[in-house]
View 1 (tube, rainbow, N blue to C red):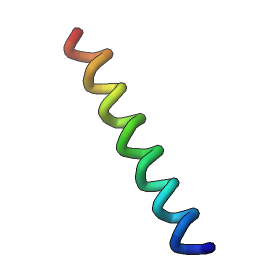
View 2 (view 1 turned 90 degrees about the horizontal axis):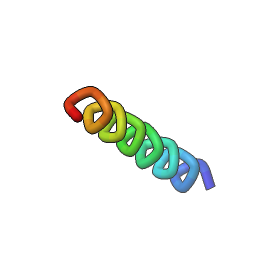
View 3 (view 1 turned 45 degrees about the vertical axis):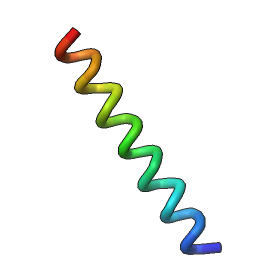
View 4 (view 1 turned 60 degrees about the vertical axis):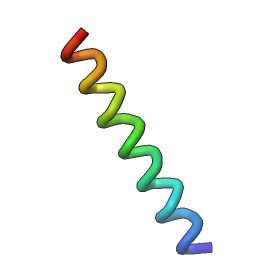
Length: 26
């Protein structure tokens, strides 16, 4: 369960960072 939550947190941070770069460079 801890591994799953950390995996979801990693994906969330990745999507947030990618979305931020897309917003910044658009």
